Image (tube, rainbow, N blue to C red; front, side, top):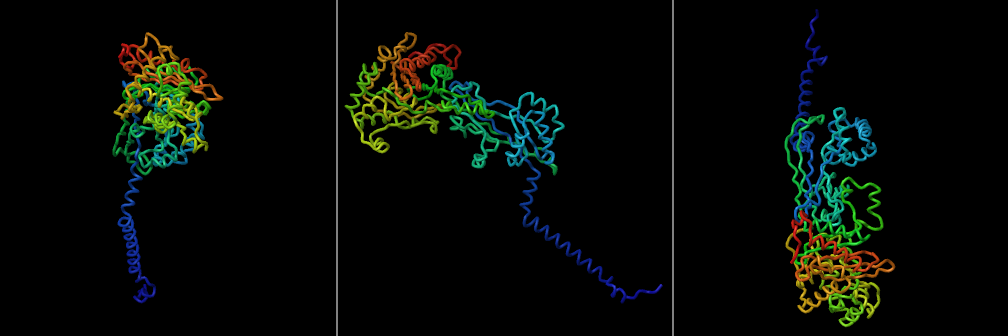
Length: 552
């Protein structure tokens, strides 16, 4: 066998292979080192965070909203447990969603289009780990799902919390309602801890005290594997419940107000403590049931809520012509509601003093009640207003119509109640409020003689004037004033405002019938009587906690 010479190795290049191999290995190792340096040194923190995001999931827990209670602790708004259907995309494969969606649709009787829409709407919320599809579910739907749950990975039925109003439409306008966030709202509020599946207060106290009632989200931290399967619980943060809110409302008197308003198609009632301004009852008609918003109103319900009669409008906070009300006058003129007397008195004092007195009594401005966004300030169409809006000078006819509460003068029932409270308590303008706390009141500077004349005249309205229906021996002495406001071409408004017991008042009531077509003495005063009977003769075991009549 011939020998192979060294020259042959050199010619074939075999002798250079170890060097080339070493160079290649060094090159590859250098590339790996550079890549590791790039990944770990330059972008290590970023990739560690991404790895944690892939490994750890947060399952949110929604907070229980605080309750609304009447002044004795009886529940006006609370929460109820229900069931909701969820989709968990990380526990299944995306390609299996259409099949799962159709199975759920057939099993639960829910349109597949609705399930698809909800999945897309909530896909970006909570990193798509717990997507609400529909709810609340009926007991039958829950039972059907649980019978087949093991064959539908990625779907889950779990407990949800909905707002509940156990008294239905009672005090609905001031309690308000809650509903789901819109996408636009979520984009604004997510920095404050809101989630897309959150509900938020829309009107009334639910809206005003949203931050007090809503609480704070909690959740579980879960470790998942690459397939999205839960491996273990890493942490658990309980949701912080919202705080309860105790109102000044007296449930027994509120029920009486709702009954009284059944006598008119549209109207309002306000009852308050004349010393403090605490609102004891407040109702508006027509009304609505806030429970319809818990699940979302149906088309028929939504159309009913938006009918021309405006059932969601709180008429206790809206302004209307006050009719023959006056803050000055003699006893007999008050008793018989003499327009001619007010004509002469208005002309005598003149428009400047007339409107000055009206503003001092709180007309033309907000009362200070918590639900300020829904309260009208009313209108005092004085000479400056007429010049600016109508472009005409003031005349004596304007003074006459303003003096009897007609023309460009409108006041709200709650403003009217505030005025009667000032007469009842000796001349202090109180701040009406729905949540119990110390509130300011302002001295009006009325002379003792003025107060005496007003009180005597208001008492004569009941004893020998237009409100004799309240001159009832079963009630303590009542004082007040009727009013009939013109609203052409529509029927007249009916008013009554007053207080009792006349010597030492603890209750002020203003009743209003919008376009009722009757007089204050025949429409509004009977509503007040229903309420006074409930207040001074509460049923045994009522929420007032008093079986004995309220007497001075």
